[in-house]
Image (cartoon, rainbow, N blue to C red):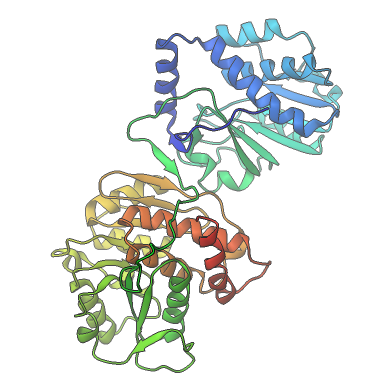
Amino acid sequence: MPQSPSPHDSQILTVSQMRGAEEALMAAGSSVDALMQLAGRGAAEWIWRICAGRRVTVLCGPGNNGGDGYVMAEAIRERGGQVAVVAAGEPKSDAARHARALYQGRVLDAGQAGAAEGDVFVDCLYGSGLTQPLSAEQFALLNRLAEAHHHRVAVDLPSGVQSDTGMVLNEVLPRYDLTLALGAWKFAHFLMPATARMGALRLVPIGVEPVSGAASAVSKPRISAPGPDAHKYRRGLLAVVGGAMPGAAVLASLAAQGAGAGYVKLFADSKRNVPADLVVDQGKLIDVLADDRNTAILVGPGLGRDTAARERLAIALADSAAALVDADALVLLGPRHLAERKAATVATPHEGELLALERAFGLDGTGSKPRRALALAEAAGLIVVAKGPDTVIAAPDGRLACAPRATSWLSTAGTGDVLAGCIASRLAAGADGFAAACEGVWLHGEAARRCPPAFTAGQLGQMVPAALAACL
């Protein structure tokens, strides 16, 4: 059976960090050969589950990823499985040569690849160290074998993907049913466009220890039920600032009600179309936010961008409570709004809003999504949730997290308002800014998973309490 992940197996490593982690294992008494056996045989456990007696073809490259493939193929052969290896070239490392020497099964060269028959194709051509496109010959071989098999598995990463950025180095790479991360997650497992090609993701542990400064994968949070002496204010009061388009703020408020805050109060000009259990205050905003029981403020959904919106944003961020800034407020946000703030401030930009914030804070907007999020977090003093088909969370102190790929049905109007409500609710409930962001992102993704296809933002919000229940 595959090994059970250890508590630190949520870490995400760069290529450099992964090499350092492997060197640490070898300094502690392991060897490249031993690590290759762990990785290859661990991956073989997953392949064995999938093949179920069907033929397996493993494409092995010249490096250590190819060596993992030889180990895997031998493990399957030893169990009586039908497996053949296609060698894209001669092994170039001692460990890969040793792994090939131990493999007792069939090896075909690239010219014989047409004779490889099977149902399961395993890509061990290149792993996380790739920095340049596959050659024309390698690219053609990879695609030919992938097309000839019904099921496709990538080991460590699909060949042709850049590990640290998630960029695709060759166009029209195969799509996989499963990707097996070896030793630790890599950024490409979470970043577009690479992650869209990877299918399901599974981790094969090899004993990697925690790496200082490593990013982490957002995972299911542990959330406690309210204490026996709880009341609505002790659970957290969230003030939601409405604006020109009241529906967005209502969506955010309803999601916040289901994500743990004890009391959600919407500041709006009208109570029209607002559920009876959502408190609406039509008083002056400056009076509403003078309530020292507020534990968090949410401003932005439906705010507008006119003079009144600018005034509401300034008043909201003058409050001493933690704040979440979303939607229109992100376009209006600038350094002056944050100059005096001491409480945590979370920003939830999509790509266009991220660009606007980068301009406002004097950043050039270059680099990978994690690098951009970290640069903005440091420059602005914000916890940044750079949302989209891939979502990255960054804090000013350098903490970084990536969210697992969520359903693409989230690409509909209003779902960002629900996300804002989830994160703001966790802020109000007492989580620190970075933790609240990670918890809210997970709840949002889990709520979406529980929805039927083509759901609306309203349906998504209704599933937030069920997502929260899964964390108790």
